[in-house]
Length: 378
Ligand SMILES: Cc1cc2nc3c(=O)[nH]c(=O)nc-3n(C[C@H](O)[C@H](O)[C@H](O)COP(=O)(O)OP(=O)(O)OC[C@H]3O[C@@H](n4cnc5c(N)ncnc54)[C@H](O)[C@@H]3O)c2cc1C
Image (cartoon, rainbow, N blue to C red):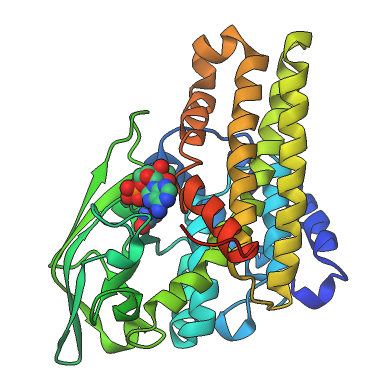
């Protein structure tokens, strides 16, 4: 049976049907309870899950038919992620980037979404995001990578950094300067990073894993039809992207926090000393769940969210830090020494990056104060 959106009267009915499919499908067994800290190993292993979900049709719900999907709105994707977490199936990392990037293409460059979404969803292609530069992170509008006209397209010159999944990707959504200073001179493009003129070097983080990459650009070619939106529209495109990066992504993550805390509570006896930490973490995770559910519903109605998605990101930071602190305290010595929990220790270490990735905590607080609450600058 190949499912389509008309078969389900709600996204949660779809989630229930997917749960039955995955529980009964022998091909899904290798993914249930699979954990590894290695991004390379998990991306390779879980590409099999991506193929299974695409070929059986389940991951095509929630995407428009003209882009190879089976219809339905983003709530179907949210239900798929929740179902995967409920079954202790790790979300393939490429899903998290496509969840941020493809909605942007659907609005600003539908011709790219229509041709490229199926390969991405199936796991045949992997994309990364290349915005940050060595001297442009929070102050992204100061970035210096240049996009210069050349024949039927453009060439890129410059350096990007912190690109998650960069060394495993064949393409990158990249923000570059096509005009003068400031945000009006920026353009978003989709560039093949497996070509001459682009060199990708993995960066090993403190936990020993290659979470990110540097990308060196020395004349990499971008065909004219790979400009996302218009020349000079890059900042607007990036701002639209943020509502997916900070909102929809938060929903995807909250399922992970809930599952991991639940597993920790089941796997060790309770120490009353840590009850307050666990209670506080659960309250923060619940707040994140409610806020991001609201955001996904707004996105499904195609509402434009604006700076209030920074609230989602701030709740994500607090929930992620608190969840992993609570798990660590609850598991006690086992958390520190049990060799079978290596993957969980890596998750803990990654959680410490929550106040930085996707826009730092300080910047989000300022955005909420100034742009949501209307407080004066300075
Ligand atoms: C796990 C992880 C994954 C990432 N993945 C990607 C990716 O895929 N693609 C990508 O392009 N980038 C990625 N990044 C980079 C991320 O977007 C940047 O690290 C982030 O935007 C902060 O920029 P920065 O590191 O240059 O720090 P800076 O901007 O130099 O900031 C340093 C510190 O100063 C503070 N600060 C800076 N300006 C202000 C201000 N005006 N007011 C108050 N405080 C301020 C910041 O809050 C921060 O604490 C990732 C980062 C992490 C940690």
